[in-house]
Length: 347
Image (cartoon, rainbow, N blue to C red):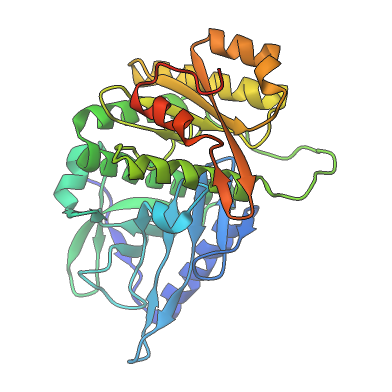
């Protein structure tokens, strides 16, 4: 049975109303962080962020610019996809499309063209990397364009957010195929399938008072410091976490490494890090050197927890913080880890 044809939303006022509703539902329940166009909406449970905005062009038209990604730190460099419809009519270049389905429910869709450093990914190449259903969208001039549904704007906020997260994850898989090759792409598909098989809990529950939110910023500082060290040594890495909930970074050289960053060393933090490293190593289907990146503490060396973690073949990489940012106490420690992986840097 052929897919029903969606009807493009082309009237300027209708486009504006749809975009405002999409933004409102995406923002609901998010953590508002500074950055980009003034703010970034971060959904920790989905590992998803989005930034809505744009600018007025000289001819009076509005240029939408909506960026999305799945990494907490360094948002500007972690844009996975932009979903930008024209403010009215049709546009062959803009990848975003607004349309009505058969029930007159509004949708945001995407044509499938992406870009990575040094390469543009075409619509056909997008479809080769993922199994995804396109739907036809008919414009008022009779043109029909096949697009990937992103989210049903007239659905609930939680459903809209989940649908956007699934599309952004799909785009990340496409990017991995053309950036890192078929093997890394297959690993990403395995991880995504596993994560989708265990959905996140939804709904509300009560928690006690919490301290100020400094975790995201600190995590980002450590992540950037580690990435800088990898880039300085020309060590290839995926520039992103393993799936949405796995370790924070992985290298893709012959002797690859999984990194999990923690900004505290409570028993809970250490247990979570161990679980993430071991579970996702299994999902990726190959052996990794596993590294837990934790804040320096003089008690680490004699901690029974740390000794048990080492027995699981997990290395500990400590970091310190100063006014100028995060640093690794002795560069030789990190150098040896990245060079050979033989020596545990805290030993």
